Length: 186
Image (cartoon, rainbow, N blue to C red; front, side, top):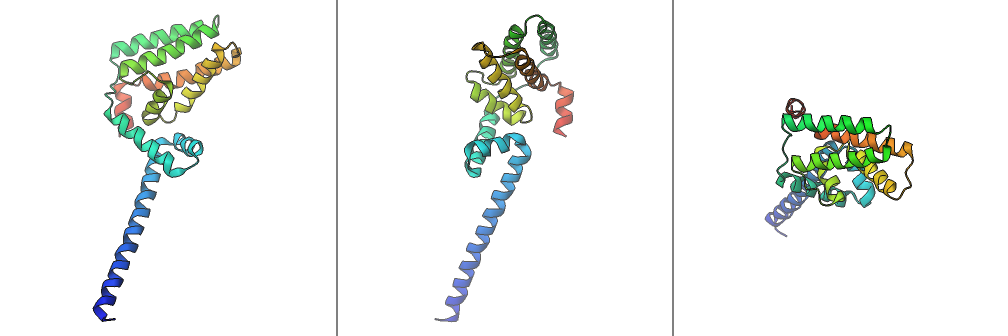
């Protein structure tokens, strides 16, 4: 075989090896970015899917879907109104924990709606929230699960208290002030 043929073969093999290395590094970098962005939600998604690539595709799909949404901060008036409503519901918890949990769920949903999140399906709401608030989305899922258990009459007061605490964590994130949003963006 002529020397020039060997040179071409070696060049093709080198290009293939370099492309494989670049693809591997690109996938690793994307995995690291998703892990950083989604935090515990990344681990949950991988565990649920049982396949890292499938979970990463789902998380990337969530990001793309979220980018298409017109999610906006609340106005100062809306923040004040919702904060006051939350204080009222929180005070109600002592006398009516079940009703307070129902109200907390409704308030969270109302804030999400006003901010621009789709609210039709709980799983989709949780997926959308996971992009912007990955540290509290698991709280939201846990609170909603207790809410559903409560509807069956199977939730005790401690469960309801825990649901309320979980709802509050997401509620506070959703009420973010513009100053806080700017600071977090830095």
